[in-house]
Length: 396
Image (cartoon, rainbow, N blue to C red; front, side):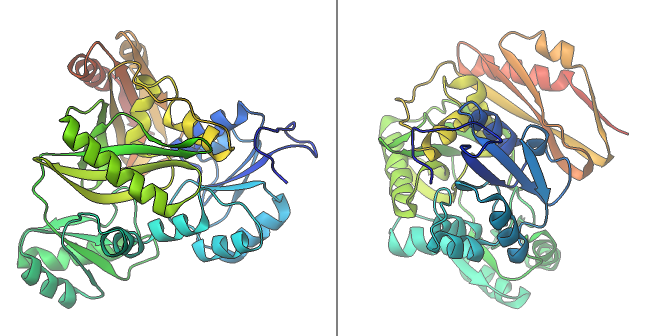
């Protein structure tokens, strides 16, 4: 049985085994941090050669929604910790495993609630009474149209289960609804189904509040500003300027949600800011893509903080090291990625380029990130955008 603060040696009987469910670029960084404590990491995903698999001790390929396959791998590997890195997992199996004594990060309940937008929205709005955008849950295009008439156009249509903006769109008119509904069904993780219709929030900016729950309490990282297009992260920066009153409200919302979900780890709490108001949007009980900026901005990145927290280790007082800015590099088309201009990008001061190592691109995919630091956010932004423009992606 795993005891916080006690670690063995990988690939031996004493090893601390971590089963990672989902092996993308965030999982890759987490795997590296876990291995700093001698953890034996087993990376799982639906395809071979995923980024975290390239640095893990071993890997398994199976659909994350396949409950029978998940049970089989858990029985085979006997992990000390099960760590979800994506939303689309057979969460009902995680609940069963947790009831049988298996440790799930942060908890199986948190994974189940946040996989489904209905679960987390009802928790935030109806149980915790947090400010949220007006919403309706719908099961058909006709119900979405009725919700649109009730909440008003434009509105946001999202599948209850999706990630990175898949299936999400802003519906600006009745005529645009049929295409938006089809897209929502195509983009849903579970292959269609119910959606959420959200009243359009006219906000000044949106933020991610990375919130860490650890053995020594809950604390928030400095606020991260971000830009999303169709629900998918494009740029993020830390710190995000705001009044102290707004920041206190955002922290209160984040700590309330994280406390209700329970467990140890880092949570990405997304909020809209409108004037002096803070409106809860979503939460991910794992490292957040906008948090890639912490690779340059904090002494301990979100991945280092997550590793420490889930292993039961105390988390240090979080502080900003340097203002930083991140830019996602996207592939468009089909093929195997090849990068050039990395040397020019790295000639820019205080700049990092992380190539994720994804084996292929199909359509539209995030393949790398640039993170730059500076004396202030504006200098970091200029550097990061210049570095991003220097890198060229070709799909062979």
